[in-house]
Image (tube, rainbow, N blue to C red; front, side):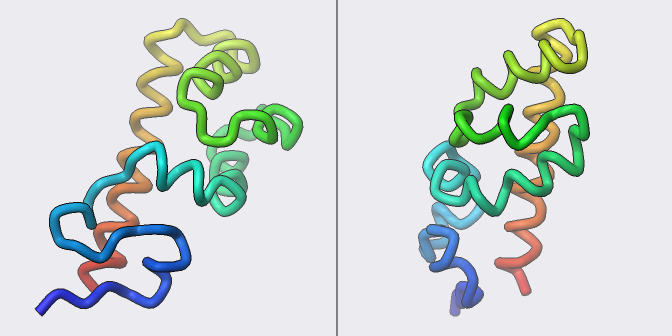
Length: 97
């Protein structure tokens, strides 16, 4: 029997097995306040002012990474994808516990 962890409702994760491994834009946007800290830890050149208007907007974040780090779009996209993958893994491990 599937049991969702207590925090899953807090961050808007649906408790159905089909959706539990999905990190999508809705989850990122609804948890933006919680995700900003780890993002700043990961990309220290991003400021709170950089992240405040982003609200989980993938393209905005890619653009901001390009500006702050001087990366090409492909590199910024790879960084965002890797961060999203890390979030998905963290959620998957938490849901499996």
